[in-house]
Image (cartoon, rainbow, N blue to C red; front, side):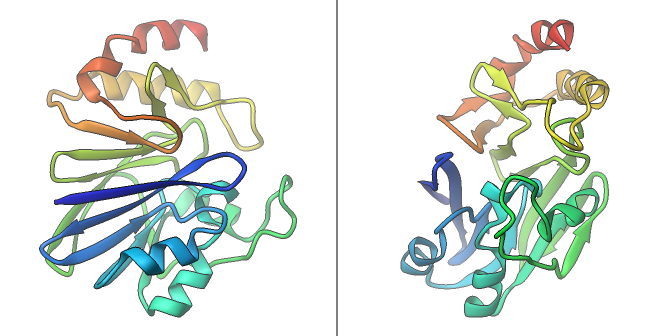
Length: 197
């Protein structure tokens, strides 16, 4: 499996291309991601969103149309794809598949696991492919997602961190902003973040 990453837009939001068995999966195509994605895929099969914030979904609709592939988005964040109080000119997008809760999918032979961690947004989720976890804005290296935005919920974030603490395996975490880390590394800090909420 190969992972390409490119920080996009003013918030340097990580857009990922995961290539497995000759198939490309695009995760969180943010602001101005379309051209970079098109240059770096040969056999795209899906677009996945970790959550619905504009800086992670900006190029959803352009890539859906230009690549002719399906968009998968957490169900509870679908309402964020069509409006943003921060970015009124957000290009609206409509998912082909709405993901509810924790869900395992087989996308053209590639196994993908969505794991729901609400708090930063109602639908905020991580996406696991093999030994990689794409965490969106749920978990960062030594930090967690903000809970002071519209639709954020500190109580949900606390529950999500408690759920995260119980994961009994390790994978490399590729967050929505900044560098990579691992589940075991960030579990060490989760008590601290729970106490801060």
